Length: 104
Ligand code: FES
Image 1 (spheres, rainbow, N blue to C red):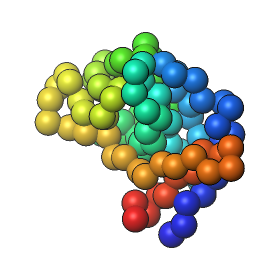
Image 2: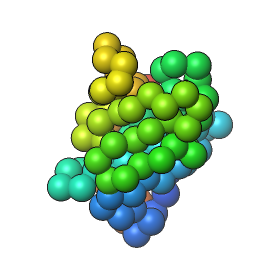
Image 3: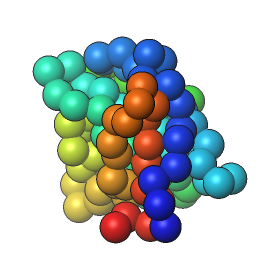
Image 4: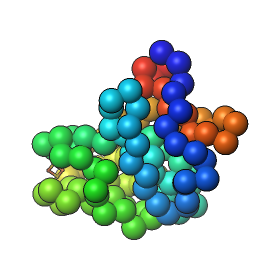
């Protein structure tokens, strides 16, 4: 599967999270402070509640459902440990943010 446009690059800001839909699939693009934008599946690995409405402070993403805590730089769950958000390859091309859901 090829890369698909998810939003304009101009919609991304360092320290913020942008929810997007790709082929009917909900993802989040997180740009942590001091890092690079990365794309993740929006479904929380706990009970699949959408992280699109999660609370992101530029470093840490909190799931509003039960309070699981994720590292904004790599998607690893910090509390509890042992879980990681599913990440998709992201690139910027022609002013557009593009994500490859197939992961190749
Ligand atoms: S669904 Fe996210 S912490 Fe429970």
